[in-house]
Image (cartoon, rainbow, N blue to C red):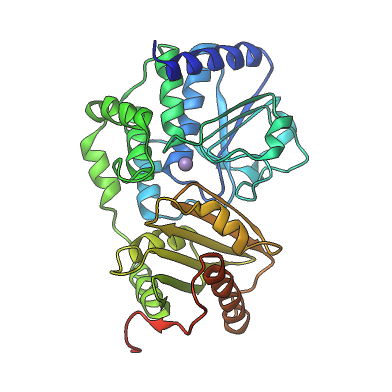
Length: 346
Ligand SMILES: [Mn+2]
């Protein structure tokens, strides 16, 4: 058995034995969950069902906003509920996937115990208080870790879960183009023939409301270029996911290697960071940018952050944008300069 699979077998054996008969199980995804977080949660739920005969509840904070993710949830029957709809005292076993306690990107109360953490973001200190921790920062997707547990435990699964896991690895690593390791590739290739191509096509080509195009227009006109850095502020937004989505869109700009996007989903400022530079440590840069204001985390080329207590009005947003831009340029060692519009004013 390859080493990773051995590790997955031993770890999953241990936490399954521990969880057996403990009581009701909660699986917490990160806020405004993406496909990777939901896939990891669904796979863990399946594992508990098959190995322990126990059902688990999947919960998240925020909303599922992105059209692709909404289609995925509907067509692949992902049953996740808002965290605020639950009485947390009902659960004796708490698991976290694709996020960690106290990172700021999940809504699980910090003072409550978390027993099992499975993630691929760099480890936070607070995890030392958790009973079971499997953090693999070299993995491109949390879904790939869960895929290994299913393999190691010889748990079979159907087309829907295969499609969820495949789409998670596909979207998180951009088809093995960004931050992937051998385990992601193994999982991706194994899952590909099991996935439902018709549903995948529907997820990848969702219809979007007309307001989506208004948001694109707003983003393009808000974008400012500072040498090889692009910053955009969407001001008030009704879907936190579009910040990351448009950050990826602007990564296509010629000559740009770093993108910082922001938008206010009141009362929280949502930040998204993308880079083409492999050696930048996006999470560290973002933590520097929001130091003293908010929280941030990320992997090598992708990071996100949040600042609480913000308002979407123009004046305070301009001020915050200027502060963060200045900090970003400084953290990157770029000269402070006046931003140039990406496109001419309308
Ligand atoms: Mn992830």
